[in-house]
Length: 246
Image (cartoon, rainbow, N blue to C red; front, side, top):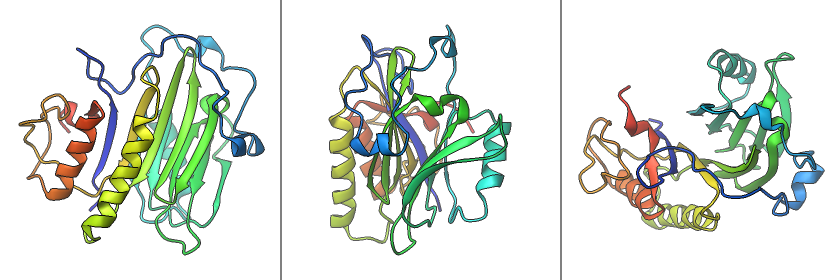
């Protein structure tokens, strides 16, 4: 069963997915391969896209193969007015980026797969935000990161597909240590959304994690769920799915 969660930085006094950046963003940190893919843009996005009280919709899905379903997904994203959608288990080979959908409702997909056509992750970005993508980091078929410039803010979007519950503990620890390092290296004045299939159950209880777990969950916590909570707590993240009833 897919255990999809969305994390975000937890600013003091206001649990949220987004934390405002101080100062003007820079594109100097863009990855070299991003320019080759047309992912780096010299001009920042128009500031009027972001207004007082603006919203930014993020979703995450495990698809168990995206082949033949990309058009269906893009239609659903447009209907739900999603800005960014993280996907896991695409089962696609290679890597790349391209648009899907009809003009005016298109989404640009950035993906990373494996030679064996297993696992695979990606991020769909609404067409209106496509020019806001400053860089793309493909760490593996389980971890991909986009850096986006949103007005005067820098947003780092992670899509991740955690190791399966049947994998040895050493493999799981290696995965979580890697992503912990990646998130911890992001400057504190940038925003982070960490979304994906975590392959663990955090349960309904937030005892001991009241600043990380919002209190709305279901079932019992398992060992992999404890890893998820430790990860989020150690990085001052809040699990956004637990902030409301479903």
